[in-house]
Image (cartoon, helix red, strand yellow):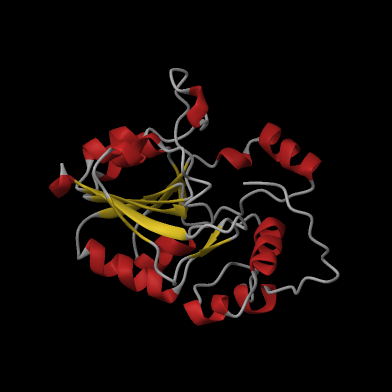
Length: 217
């Protein structure tokens, strides 16, 4: 994402209705986030190490899509979405590493607050363990490919092409501009931009939910 200058003294703090009594992100109705501004969501996300905000409508949609099949979340972060769906939450928990924490500290930002329900497994290990039919990823970074450096990504990112090939459905929630470089866009998929998906992105493009399905191959 780009860099934005926000003045906390003039930007409303939305944490009182976005966090529970333990300071953990809550699943809220989309109408709650509709009453906020992009600036407020960005400030809240940066302050609390959050990138996207699960809504009741998103959870309902995902439950219907999963339809009782085996499902897991990869890159689950705080684990709130997986907990709401009643599925295993997994993450490589990279931001727990000392050098990563130090990097974010230099930026003046907190790291991801991993939930107690988040099992330390990278995506490949999580799929090998749980053998899911459905894999959900929310704002996960794809793996860097030196053959296509213009697509960016991370050397510790997710091999999303392998995930698409290895499950019935890969469901990804993200932002149109932030996640435009993903290599898997070249594979058959469906994508929609409902008004019940929200994130901290402040670039003028919509947040989306996309599905790569075995049925479409």
